Length: 405
Image (cartoon, rainbow, N blue to C red; front, side):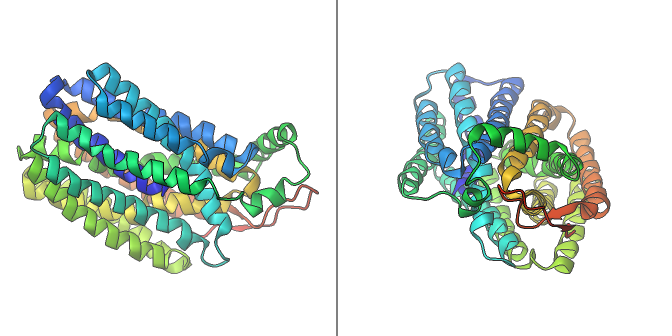
């Protein structure tokens, strides 16, 4: 459910900035600051939460962070000015970011052999489901201005509280307990850092991080900024933009389900990756070739969305779980998430201004990132080693094999 909340909150942020604009008269730069503030906070939360998940256990993280998230969303709901909005967005990002690495690691460790990739990929389906449900809510509140923006966050706030309540009875990951049964927190901190920095995991961390940065550019832009792009580039209404976004997200759910069913098959995974990067590159160039209109932007959103589902964050999550062992699984994913979100947040500050004044450059950047993603996924990532069941506290050696591309 962490991924569901990630999806619903990200869309709520994207739609709400348009609605809050009618009340607070936000400049393009202030919109960029709000969205990037959420992303930067998510990055910090992922780094800190990922590390805590390996040192103190998965349960130590996911037992409290969503309660903080719900309180932060309440701040957004009652925010009287943009400054308070920033505070609410930042705290929400911190809490959600902390939850993702620990919860995804737990899903992977609890899944049966041969189905772990599918189990992790299912989180992407939950993410897209959260997106589409929030878009339906967005349709209902699209004409309510600032009130509609506040109502958007009631849904994720309630879900956060429900999930937090249900999680109270969850137990620690057996894989984490087995790997740390005789090791105290101080010893784990020293051991994990040594393991993360030495080969083959040092180079793997760099490769996965670079992949995540470039593969997430188009997904982030067309996800969080889809409403803004449609209303700015094609001069459509918020209602039209939200309806379009719902349709494209339903396509993403179908693409995500296909990915989830095939990801544990090496050959099928590679085919989906190639198709995904091709969709991203070609789709990004459609508005340039056909002219910037509602329909060309819709084609771009559909193509890059499918590309993100097959060659983006879902595959990044699977690779991260497969490559890194239990002792550093949450830390490594938190670091890659964090660094990637820092980069995306930095770029995101300029997206509204580019969309308003230079959309051609924005599309070219998305296409170029798709090309880099293809090169990384076809040439570098497949050469990385893949962790088998991990080194135990008694010092059993790690068993490694080639990562599946």
